[in-house]
Length: 277
Length: 250
Image (cartoon, rainbow over all chains, first blue to last red):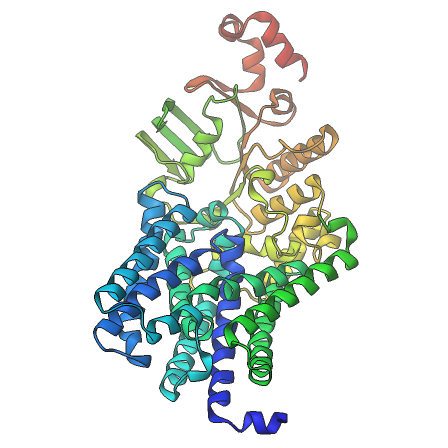
């Protein structure tokens, strides 16, 4: 099967469009999260999304309609992680762990009460970008524009708190507001990315493009751009490779990201061996 | 009469372990260069961090430019430089120019866009501190002394009236440290920047600062270095030998 033939399928076109938008968002946010040592927030929020998906399925809300439950629940959970960090004197990873276990246990109990695991819920574990609907593409495009606009508006504030929260505060930046903006944007992106890679692999999409970019970037803006490029490329390549080889798309996307990270790591060691440790 | 830049009245700060600072009443006037010294755990860093809102005040008051520190909002009038090692993630992917430009955000309103004029200002500040050739380098790749100059450039790029330095030379070798102190003294002398410098190095205070604040959870001494060296009361508190050692480095 040749390229034009593959591209002629509607489901491939939808997957390419929505997947690229979602991957670019996750990759850009990933740079801030990795540098702020909040990499695992994606995992935590994905587990909450699993819980919210179980609620949606219990309410007979499917596909795009399930976002009506997932979005508010995950946005609230992201703020819960922040509040736990601030008020309960917990480190970020402990707060993420608490919210994560709450989400996954709620999901398991709801699934069990609702008659055991079903195919719809398992779809959230591994994602299925090829089954994305026209409606979901439109929602992904809308949220992509919203998140990108907010990122552009808050870019310098996010850069400042990522460099040093202490210095940002002394520059008059309201760090608690900017932290909230960061986790809310992440929550929006995680809900979208569930369809692409699922709960099991969502962290990979947030962490790997950022980790690769950190190996090679020579400025902060270059780091953001490189991460976005890798995220977008990995989804496009992953969809084609998985279609041709009949492998699961989500795992293929993650493996391509891992390979690109390996290349970036080796390239850094070759370019600058002194900085290789 | 010069106007007051920093005022504290019976200021106290506490952590979980107990009170780290109490009954601190000082006034720093425009153009002063105050060296804050004292033993480890004496509350030096807590004092400057309380002034800029990084540490909560448990009793008393603090004002910056006549405004209570809790409602102070003119952050563009302040430059702040903490210990570089505490601050820097060596993997952080920012260039020197990007790092210094962050210092201009205190002058901006949301959405804090940086302009071409801002980039020229960054270049001029780097030029002034002799590190312009490093502007495209990554901050994590620089030596300790270079990093500290860049962070000083970040603190100075907004042309502050008050420069707060919290043990800025802790990671530097003696030669770089001395050059750094000279640079700060020059800022104070030529640009009239008021300086509040926390350091362990009492000798440097003697050489450069106009006032010395000796803290040990409360104010032990606040005045000129000459007054400190000539004070019989200080001789009684520290012992003549210790006082001589501190003043001998002058």
